[in-house]
Length: 180
Ligand code: VGL
Ligand code: ZN
Image 1 (tube, protein in one colour):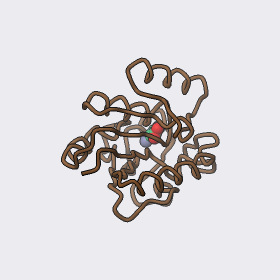
Image 2 (tube, protein in one colour):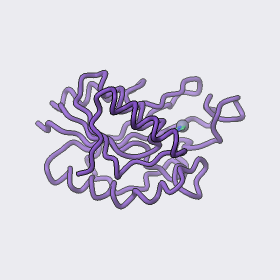
Image 3 (cartoon, protein in one colour):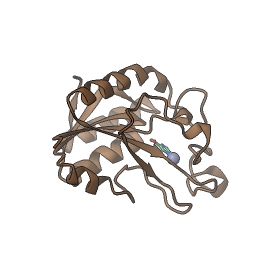
């Protein structure tokens, strides 16, 4: 049973430069994330990839009064992954219902159950955006009783000052900020 899981958060086209909701320099972490995927795969860890997977009329979109431009609509090119995922990657789709927002990969999904069934104790988190979905996913992992590591060189935030704040908060709450 794998004791460890790598959780790759929302590495999707719309969050990259040129996409609908770009994380500045989000593409710069792609090689690092791919490296971590390979490394964790080689040591037998479970690979999980979360994806923002919104319906056309999602509540978080500006046309519905939400904060974000339309992004990561289900089955569109903008929702596609931009990293190399092994075939047996566990894909977790979130915020899939029109009226519910979810930043965390644990919210409204069976991620906790899957990890526990597989015997996972420690999770390593990378991806985008640090202060939104990465933060929410890492903090939820902690709440669900996992030991949580954040891969500092494989995350990217939307705003540097918000990213810093989120990193500090995560550290204070017991998440270990590391580079491997
Ligand atoms: C995200 C804003 C809206 C994220 C998702 O993946 O961090 N941010 N939807
Ligand atoms: Zn979203």
